[in-house]
Image (cartoon, rainbow, N blue to C red; front, side, top):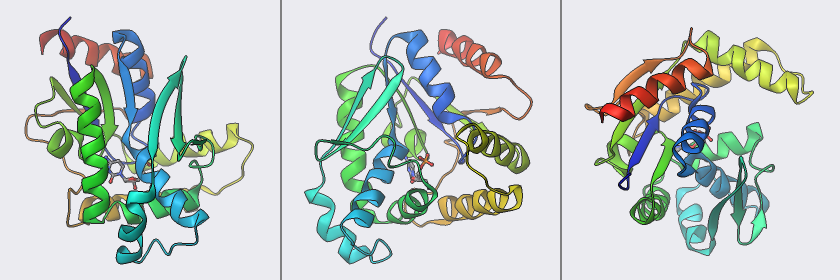
Length: 221
Ligand code: DC
């Protein structure tokens, strides 16, 4: 197969990473989790006591970060200046910081450049918010995944329970709605469906059904 690229965009909790990972495995290509890269910037700010709400401060440090992605079997590993941060980025505090730093022009420019570089080197399935619109406007296939807010909150709730954490559905629903608002209303590269993206509502579909559907779309692309 020639080099190809699949863009998967959509709101938090729509199932992007699960689906993108499965697709990459089936197609034998690289999965790139761009959200993890924004989370790495957020985590760096928290660790270095850089106020992530202050755009100028974040822009001062963005060039001191080296973010590398790697895969080990099914697992995606992300390194920040050589340190494995794959677990550390999966907290609500880091998610909130990531959502904020993702509104900054300079941060987006640096990360988008790195993402395009990866696409130019190999076949990829890349997930995020601006992949079909900004990062890979020339992608072979663009998918926009959606699911109702209730369903996304339910999925997050189950994820938390599996990790042995307690959280209320009310809190999770509010968190998802806040992030949706921030991601869709920011000035630069807001979350939106590319004109040529195919929307897949995952609310009532199983993971296998979604993956099968996208594989059929890929055959036709
Ligand atoms: O997908 P995620 O929850 O790991 O993403 C973390 C934050 O990063 C999210 O609030 C939106 C932002 N993001 C972005 O603006 N652009 C991307 N391509 C990926 C994520």
